[in-house]
Image (cartoon, rainbow, N blue to C red):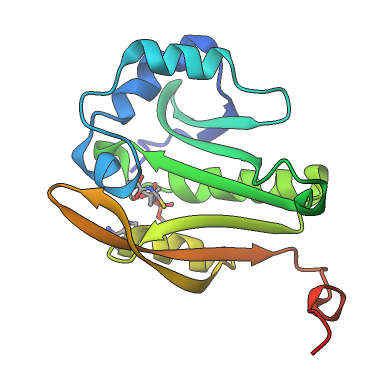
Length: 179
Ligand SMILES: CC(C)(COP(=O)(O)OP(=O)(O)OC[C@H]1O[C@@H](n2cnc3c(N)ncnc32)[C@H](O)[C@@H]1OP(=O)(O)O)[C@@H](O)C(=O)NCCC(=O)NCCS
């Protein structure tokens, strides 16, 4: 529940560093991302202060409290992949399942489709992360492949799916190579 308060999405500001750091203390968030236990507050301060101009870090807030974040950036520096964006996101363990993940992803997709002209959005998700997969599928992402032993997590390797979503207006015959 959001206690009647709407979820508000806005750009992260330097003053959000502590709240974002707090998000990455949660075991579920650590397990679902590439973050490590005992995250450094200083690292988050620096990361938020130095977000490159064309990258976006969005936060979800309820009643002014930051409860999740999403990063959206160009997937590659190559001009030939200028049309591709990559994203990652997290909602604080004790604030999940209240719609913040959906609100963050909806905002990122509107930004990507309507303003940044990303035609393809990419992400990686561990194959056992049912919550994230449900969310991504809901917003049109599809599994394109499996990366085996993608990351080390809590004493063992974990596979990840590569997922992507194409802009709804993108005609596939423009991007599929001659066969
Ligand atoms: C994935 C994550 C961002 C979703 O955020 P959230 O705020 O819980 O998302 P929402 O509340 O908007 O829920 C989105 C949908 O997923 C579903 N969902 C959420 N948690 C779920 C769970 N544990 N199991 C199954 N479905 C789940 C919701 O029911 C909802 O479905 P609906 O819209 O069809 O009803 C959040 O679980 C998270 O931060 N996990 C840890 C970090 C992580 O895994 N990040 C993603 C890395 S790829």
